[in-house]
Length: 206
Image (cartoon, rainbow, N blue to C red; front, top):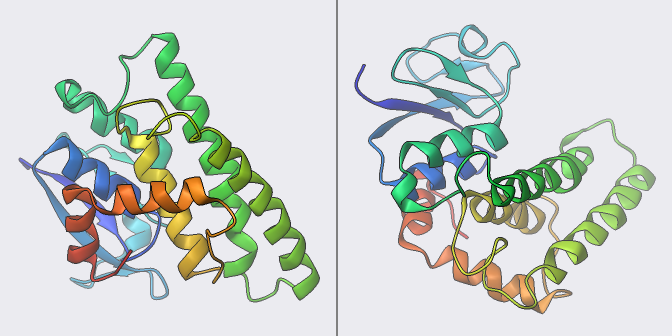
């Protein structure tokens, strides 16, 4: 095996490592997952690859598999340090990136889970929407004096933030218009060649 393999579902959170792989200019292949049937396009059992049942998963060159996106994108960044998609491991700046990724994962990404749950009631979804909107306000505040979440350079945190902002618009059916900083940020990220390529390959739009 001479390529990384990203297991993905179009428009799902696997979009974040997909963007990271293209930003890092690494060789990789895509393996599409039918999450409802828990099958790969070749008929293989998805749960045999990732018993957690969700995407993404990243098969490494040695056969090991990573299954959590916030960790996965850091691994990808570390394979191409010259791309500067993450600060060097062990630095304070790296911990700030991890803090940002953790916030996106737990407060924004996980916060939107009620909208994918058919059993969640309208009142619960309303409360969830208000809570997530507050977290987007926090994200917008961090962009008032800089173009990217970590400063002047795009990092893997921006790819993950792009995914959750897209999910807010396409899955939750809400606008980013309450946060002008986020509207500009989203458009800026969507215009990056690696991001545009990932969207095109997955057959989805920003």
